[in-house]
Length: 435
Image 1 (cartoon, rainbow, N blue to C red):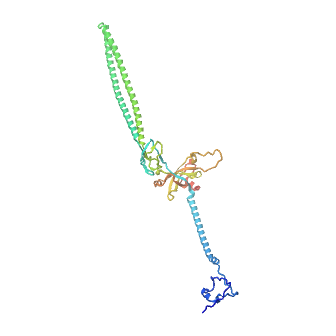
Image 2: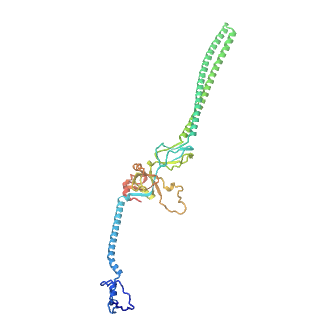
């Protein structure tokens, strides 16, 4: 049987396939089989209700969410405000209890009286026993120079000393011989004096015999000659004593001169010994080697820097406080030190002394405000702080490290009248500390 022919539909607008409200529409297959469904609908049919606006639906659903977010924001702001109030309260309490009594500066650094090692003599470096950053004890060898030339110089000095000692010994023997000659000359004087007395007695007897006509004139003349000869012999013997004593004195002077020369040679020998000892550069104290600038084979001259030794067991802190803070800083006050390198470890110390002038006065070009425009600048005065030995023994502090120094004015001892200040307890309670 033939299929019924469907009437044509002219100018039919496409119908929307999405239906928001109402019962579900028929399937396309049922629509195609039902001619009445494809026929145009009357114009007086009520229009379908408009589709719901997605934006309106989302807006309606966002109102509760906005309210929730607003409540959470208020809670967060309240918590932040409460935390800020708590922090401000804690800061105020800390300032009232502790902070107002502290004088603080961050212009502070660790220091140490390090030694710059340099040779006293010139020469080639034979060995460098000390390594960079090595701990050394006082007297440990750091650098050794070639000592061959200095040993030869010392041996030559020893030879000259031996020669001069022999000279002094020879002069001593000559002095002993001269002393014997003096004694011999004195004995000759005594002998000549005895002969002179005998000759004088013979002369007296011959003269008496001649007067009594019992003696001859010839015997008297002989006695007279013997008397004169014996007197001359006495004078000659005395002159011999004088010559022997003079010779002895000359030899004694020569000995003195030789002894002085010997002392000079011994001094020169000591200098040679010092030069030999100086070929080994030793650590002057316990410390750590740093800034090593020498190698084996280098030629060094006196005064040339080769390395430095830093005494880590004798470190201190130099804090540059403002001049407006000095009124509350007294030697003996306790100091709390916070090292930037070890913020979790506080270090304690004591104010040791204050510099006699501001840091600007010790600069290379001190300021001169006598001429030109003047701008007042707050000056800083170095304050030496002695670190607690227990903290020094830990070995953490290194010269040059930055430090925050806080001086507790409550611990200041009684000040002397010369400083124009009052008792420490009154000072700490009267005026708050400055930062």
